[in-house]
Amino acid sequence: MLPDAWKDSPEAEYRTILLYYTPRALTNQADALFAMAGITRRLSNKMRCRFFQGAPAAAFDMFMIFSNPSSIFRRRQGFPSYSWCGWIGQIHFYETNQENNWLAHRTWIIWYKRSSSGSVNLVWDIMANETFPIANMKFLGYRQRTPFGTRHSLGFSTSRTTPTQEHDFEREFPSYPILQFWTLAVYFTISDLAVFQASGNIRDKFGNSCGYIEMDGFEETTFFETSALLEFIVLSEREEGEPMTSWDRDNLYDSANRSNWKYYNVLLLEWNGGIAERRGLGVICQKAVERSFTPGPIWKEIFLA
Image (tube, rainbow, N blue to C red):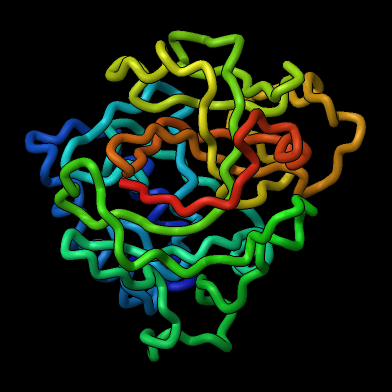
């Protein structure tokens, strides 16, 4: 039977389970999801939604934002970089108060999944989940969305969310579905690198500190040695007062204009053959969007493995 606490907040219990499960050394890394199958099946029933690559589809944004403050992630091959199961190391997920409100008003990406056959479908389709209790706010999930365009005046449209159906890739398609979606891409550099923590400051085109980054797979790739200008994609809004680490925001150029929801969660991407992978999770000031290096900011379709 499920613990009583799961009845009220099964998603919080799942985060706790993964916090203790992910540091364990697996005999076979290919069992990362299989070992959790029984738990996710029961949680799926409690949350009234399907799971996709180890994350509840009804709150996918919430489970896209994870980090490992205590050490450095290593890549787990055969699993997607966009999911916790694609990384070896202890997982810490982003948490905020009033999670349903956050999903409705602080996220905007319409997530699609693309299979090796080229089939493209929604990760979360509320119309196809008839058992999801829309009127019961005790259940975590998307009910409405706020388009990104209400946040900035960028001089170009940010309204497209529909995926490109026909697309050719220059590399072999992975063994798992990739994510396909539209969001804002921005370009910055990294400075003040702390090698042993694989962390650093994000700097805009004027050389000002505008955020913080924790890099993934740092010791397994030459990506960080060769890339001076890096591509970040904007995922969601982040509340002031919830730092990913002990990041000192007083060093930021907009520290005198603090208020809640003045930060973005961002992913650092590395592209290969038309498909990207996650290479780090960061936080930037919202003002930094207008201070991106060329070619950004741009509204861009992302293919994420």
